[in-house]
Length: 243
Image (cartoon, rainbow, N blue to C red; front, side):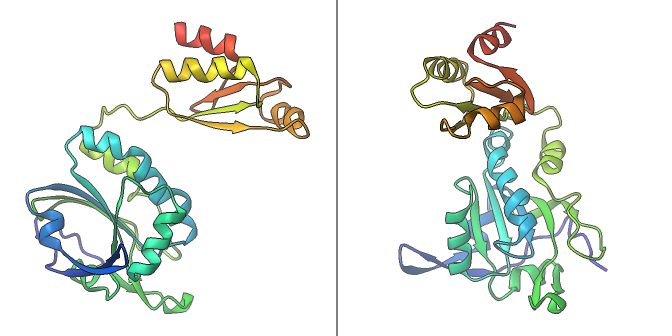
């Protein structure tokens, strides 16, 4: 049975990493001493849940964690540094420090090393997250010991709710636009002026009508969505922001 390590120090481990084509050793002392650190650990780089949700959401919420006293966010996996580096390039991970626990020493020291030989993985980390202050584990969220790869409590939102229950999370904004469209430019200008970090999805003439009709019920660009809600075009966005 997996045991919580709350109140205990993290294992004393040296990680071998590859940076700028040179080998480097990073110790747990360098990563944790005198810092408030969030750690999330997962079964493997490039695996579905890890890539689609676990890593991206921690990366997205990293600025919010920082505003509430977190100095760094570490992603730990029993993979070598080359795999972790390539995964970082493939993902939205610029706010995350990737830690290759290639020998599984840190994971074993945390009591989280499990056998996934049935998947051909060998020994890997169980999925968990923890808050560590000055090298001492303050809180752990360990996924339930169920078949498969449960993902219920080690997510970024659960950790943020523990650290700062009233924290304001960033809005998720998408603009479906058309190249050269003045109304689209106006909508994006309004979002910029109001401090929104948005994703622009330009659509060409061959697919624009069908895509916009399917997702918004409208045929014209732009169409702006905020937190899953359709706002509409530039004029509708201006009215929304005025409120």
